[in-house]
Length: 109
Image (tube, rainbow, N blue to C red; front, side, top):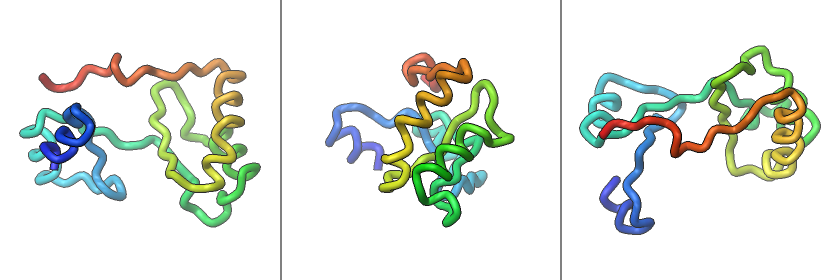
């Protein structure tokens, strides 16, 4: 699969996130063989029915008990997430959080 992705975008994937966050010994072994960094999310809510609107999603993302330095946030390509993202980013910035450039994350060689 990585060969296909690399053939299309001219860059080999560096990060692996298992579907539903279900990392197994097998998936971790494959990621290691592919020299990928296994990553998972700290929290995400946009798939839950009660957070499928801009206001509710913004509020929970900014006030989650799981929010902290180094949090990795799960967000999907959905209408309500797209509508909320600007307010979420601005809210994190107001709280003093910064966003990390993925190029700064060390990946397996």
